[in-house]
Length: 176
Image 1: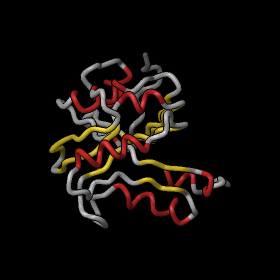
Image 2: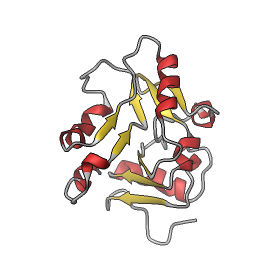
Image 3: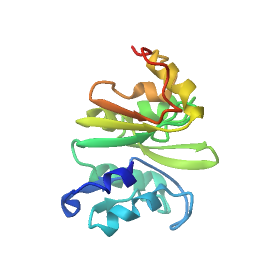
Image 4: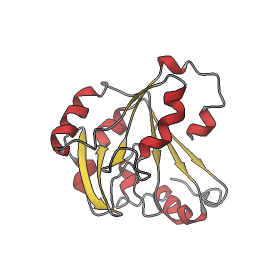
C-alpha cells in the first residue's frame, strides 16, 4: 500500500504517521514493521514509531497512547489468513477490546507485540484494509459473512475501504 501511495503527489512533509502495531524486537530487526515506513521518512513524512525497544513495554505503551491524536484521518490495516489485524490475535480478544488505547499482545506468531486497540481504529475517519493472496480468500469470505469470532470483525465497516488482489477476492455478490 505504501508503495502505491508513493506514486502520488502528496505533501509528505505535512503528513504524520503513527504505527498501528509493531513486534517487540530490536532496533533494525527484519521482523519490525518500522522498516516499511522508511520510504515515507525519506520523503519528509513525520513518523512516530511504537517504542517497542523500551525496557518497560507497558510504560512505553502508555507513553505512546498519550502521543496519539484524538482521531486519525486514516488507519491502514493488513489482514492475516487467521483473521488477525493490527496484531489482534485470534483468541486474545482482550487485546482489541481493552479500554486502553494501546495494548500489549502475545506471544503471537513468535512475537510479543504492541498494538492500538479497536477504539483507536474505529474512531478514525476511515480505515483501509489490504489483503493479498489466495490464502486470505477464506477469511475474507468469513469476514464478509459476518463471522464475529474473527478479530477483523471488530473493525467498523462504515468508512472502511478494502483492497484485495484477485486471488484474495471472494466471488462477486458475497457481502453483508
